[in-house]
Amino acid sequence: MTAAVSNRSFPGARAIFALMLREMSTTYGRSPGGYVWAILEPVLAIALLAAIFSYAFRAPALGASFELFYATGYFPFMLYNDLSNKVGQSIKFNKNLLAYPNITYVDAIAARSILNTLTSLIVFALFFIGLRFALDLQLNIDVLRMCNAFLMTFGLGIGIGVVNCYVMSRFPIWTNIWTILNRPLFILSGILFLIDEISEPFRTYLLINPVSHIVMEMRAAFYPSYDASLSSPLYVYTLAAILLFFGFLLLNKHHRYIMDEGA
Image (cartoon, rainbow, N blue to C red; front, side, top):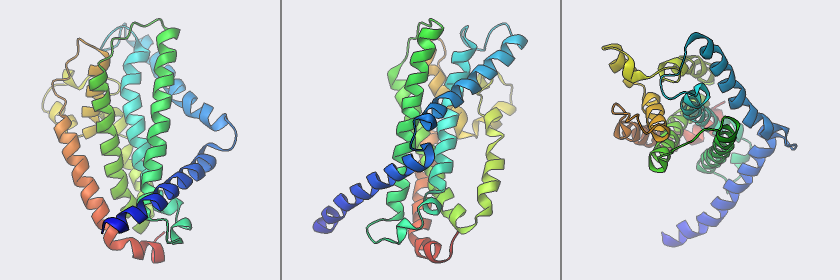
């Protein structure tokens, strides 16, 4: 048993690395332009939000910077959305390569999860460093809460992504349905407002959405005066674990059918 695991570990690592290189070349191209757009996209989105709402409100719900307020909500949502979609299409994207015996669907999922997570972290760091100097902000970041928010995002995004990987592979129409169903979360996750300020029973309804807990946790990391008392990391981690378990259970049971007959 130990020997089997050991023999698989090195080919698996090489397969994941090769899939990551392929993903980088396909997604971002062979020129740096693709990576520049990965940075510009959130910058432009946050700048547009800040410009629009600065005309309607004197100050954001927290602090004095509209850019910082929206960035602390937009980035967790963007990472969750990117992971759940990209991981969900892992088998479909790499189906031809999965015919090789040394490459498994787990490798495909791991490669997409790692690459998109690392890319998002780099974009996040570059954006906030730029924001710090461009607006001369004095950031007092709670690193532990920020890391917790990232872990919540990774867990939820990958958990939903693994379930999507099965559903999207079996039922291609789900890719379009998921995109439509996911759009309202941009509003319902508290990116543009504080869920704490919403009256009941609507606040309870919004808290069913796990992304709202991640946004609150991330904002608590950047705003010392905001304690995010409604945030429940346990809820997000539990949901992520359940999704991962059932997602891999379904893939393990049906991956041969997906490879032979799926999309």
